[in-house]
Image: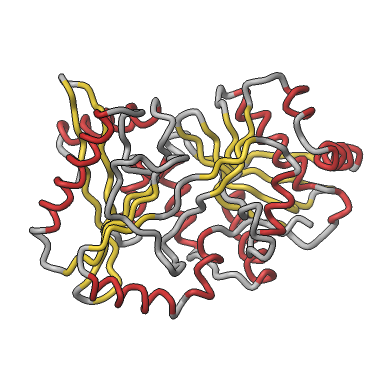
Length: 353
């Protein structure tokens, strides 16, 4: 069933607004909300205008954790004016609209979770708390972004020497990089992703998750699958999402074969070159371990990513606004039972070392 024209136009305007707003990401887009709906999650939107122009808002996902309890989740948002009193006003208006929605719900809403793409917490954000537990519904808050605006020589020069060296090693071994979003490409991506997850002892997302994501984004030209190949064998892969000014390395995997040819290094360098040629300004490597946490489960992946140089982006932590303390404690207890899987389900990327 298609949406009414007015509703479709509203979402189109929202997506255009988002793409021009740096401090947000694709997880606030209408198509991400639609994708999440295919996996069973409801959502609603709050958009605010000033003299007919969008100034902010939020796409809010509704996630159930018990038969009669759920919570609200705003990924990459809420989206506010850059700064000043307007940002405060828009934030308060969004919270009030969400509260009105909460009053209509039949289920108990335990809390509102926000994960804005802010590097500092505005003073007007009050009453929120950082969760003392980790769970499956948290995205990376530290990431590494490569500036694609300079010349390619400059992009290479800002990498660590080992990163540049390994790219040259892959080139000497005649590693090649291909883009393939055909049925065969998707099958190869899923095969490599699954083998990587099993080898690393990581939780595996349902393969239908990726099939739905790729099929939804392909017509929008906002996803590509990349492969680094050596002597006819696909060794490593990356799923890249395009949105706004960023190309994002969202998921990937690599086979435990022919590591001496350094295929992952050339893979990401060629992705950067393609994204630059397409007009994107940043390549987001989507999640690194904080520098002061040597035992973080993403440490090995982060060592690999940091060889590409770039700018580390440290975002404010995940924040929860508790509506119902008893329901929130129930949620925390439920999620702590699956803590061992939480980090694994967030991001499955290759162990390149």
